[in-house]
Image (cartoon, rainbow, N blue to C red):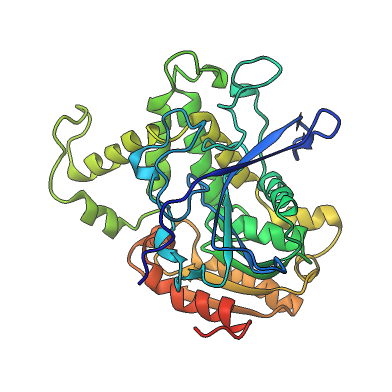
Length: 387
């Protein structure tokens, strides 16, 4: 195993103007959008070796290497953030092989790690956008990312890769920009938000709204809604990690100095997840990730276009590598089965891999050895690279 990509630095790309604002699916507009992003590896002369990587719900553009600080993150760039969230997956001879590919990862629109979001300054008012910031769809983020690709001179991606909601964005790319991507690699994702996703997200949304400090999202000049955000994180976390893993991580103790409500080791573990999270994330950004997830529905998009799902999926010449995780209780395996049935009906080539893990949904973040052989075989053998 190599030492990875080493120390990296965040880059920023700003686009838009009063005459040509960025238009959200909601109908709202902003005159200017900034994306924070990082690149690992080098673009070749033809600029056809790029892999676009979408981070998951509360991830960032910092996917690999070590980055000690990112401007404009208002103290949210904690020690936990400094090592890339997919560091073990990206680098020379790793799953996304930087000897061959340039891997690009950008922070979502509406997020809180350098891209324009609710905590950004509104140039009109001189204050933070707060509650006035538009709702952001997955498609909004995808379209913004392709503005970045245009700036970098990338006409066609070798692959688009992402896990969880990031995997949903990969599927949006395949239907929105069908001629601009070769391989589509959704990991533990699906074609639409399920009833489970919508209910869990709604619980988290209410946790934040019910915090007395929320103030309609305009809380930046006062105390933040940390109680609500911590509760939201605890609600969501229970679907990210398998129950066996939670029990193992909780050990047999309650951390000293815990809140009086905490009595049991498993409660202590969950409490810690919430308290750790509020130090690195913004409640307004979290709401927008919840709404983007809830609203994701490629079946509804196909209906808007007046086509069936197979017809919409068949619009390009790409191939799919679909991953399931057998212990996943956030995106159950049936969601990937639904996707592969639609791909089969569309006559699109695909391989479907079920990863066997005890870690649940988060296996795609934690266990690179389960994914690496499949990723390298599919992404590199197509070009005749030695695996």
